[in-house]
Image (cartoon, one colour):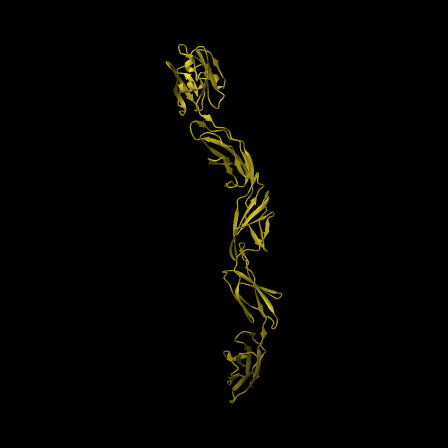
Length: 453
């Protein structure tokens, strides 16, 4: 704040702005000058005879003014406060100005009939320059007094805060080199912005770009300067010092993996997180084997299946296949739904025990019937068989004359009548014994022929 006698300017003003203390011994018509940030002025004084030495000081600055007020004709005792020579309170009460009004205004020093009018210039205070530091990726600085907010400058992005901290870990700052500086921003005309603070530099780690799952192991690319990697798998926390993690606890259906490269806790900042969803295929159900057919149920829409049995293995896109297993040997059949993309995981394997006994091969005979072109197929029953399927074909040379639909015979009647006709010169028959309960495997085929000429 500048205090000058109204209409008067001289070199004293310039000296005061330079922060000098000027001593002038003169009458009360002299110039009063000082600078203020809008707070109360500090006024103190002492007396000698009829002259009071008055010092006006602007708070929080080094600029003050020292002058003498000639109170000739006024009693010095009237300025005394409780008999002392300290005139702070009386003079404060008599010096009047509007500390909230930035700019030029009038003020008065009044005592009795004595009145001195001044022209004041109230200047805003420059806010204090901040000093910033960092811990655990959080930039901090001390709160300062005044009407203000804070501007945080991070590379080419500006953030405005009302608090005295800024987390780089929570911000959207891109990976790479990061520079941070802060300044105080005035929010009223009583203050002006501070200079920028000191600058801190950091390195933010690159984000993991993809995760693969192969042979029960999660793998990802190695991130330069990463101390470790934190993972969240279906809500459970894991950590790895390398770019891989053995994991076998994926659940059927969707599984979410979140990963973050971790810095050193000081000037190397954690990366942004990367998330990937893996779909673990459903295991097959209801495996059935009826020699030679193996089939199963599956809820998976599109995948391939691996079938392992003994030392053999086959892969099929269907939910069935043919396996020609030897009878009276125990087999453990394992079926796995296989992953067919980078974001799917093979199902859990399902096993099915097979130890079956094959029915004996029936014996068959063809004999002449009661009429010249009629013949009878006779099947000898075998243990545990419940039905016999006969396929009959009539030939003339190499040509088929007639191919009968397969006939099913049971133990009640194991004879099948065959009418050969005049064109046929050979009867060809295949017979298979089977079990309705599918406890036993079908027998081998019994093949029998009879020439008719």
